[in-house]
Image 1: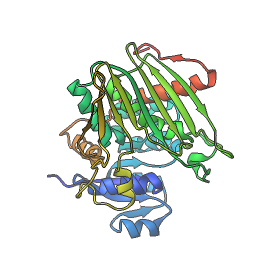
Image 2: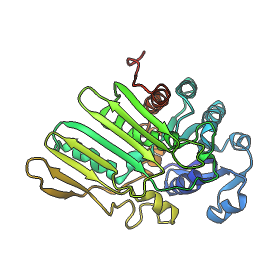
Image 3: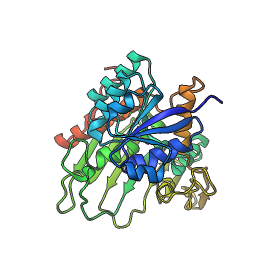
Length: 348
């Protein structure tokens, strides 16, 4: 195998420290070479072989770096991605792609013009429950799908002093969890016809959206997406109802918690779902567990490394990430207008 490609990680906050640094380091085709951070001591304690630099310019000026991973606050995603692309670097952007669809399109156009890989970290395509659901739908056991609910509900009643919960561009739960919810449904069912969305601030003292509820309208089904910070009993993750049977799932994928506690990526027990889904047969009401494969976030970076070697395809091509932004933006407009927003015809 060729020598690993050197990576500069921009940002060592929650996303950079919890997700990107461990996954990049676990990927055989990549090397965590540089981190743009003011937390040099924390970086040295966690990843002593990585170099800390104080500015993005320092990382972009290094010819040894081939890939830049952007894990900074959402408002910085597009400008930092543009700077990296202008410097001739391939780019991974943590979700959301950008603050809005127009900004995301500018980044995608620049990557295409420069002939550089650009991808967005929609890692929850590799959640254990989502992989299991994909397999269930591929097998056709549920019959034609009529309705889907997908939830990311959390119990965080106290407002925290962090950028995600302040009144800042790109803050709030719709920008944070909405891209995950949307991307998974677009992977399964494609582009919806229209979006109806309600966004709210429900917690006392809240400054950013902490409750989001959207309905994606398809010709033959309805998909409900829900995320909030106000649910004491977050039981539902997926409820998928077909003409013949339903597929029910509770509990979140374990990989985030495993990364936070230092479990070795792809080590024993990695990504294994402790509470598999249940299939419920419509005719009889019989219930049976449906075990699925383990989750595998590292598959994203393995695919990025392969694509950069010319041995595989981009795991999340820009057009797929732009489709997520289109629905995300339609949701904001729907909530503002308190009305359904139809998506423009493809190519329109």
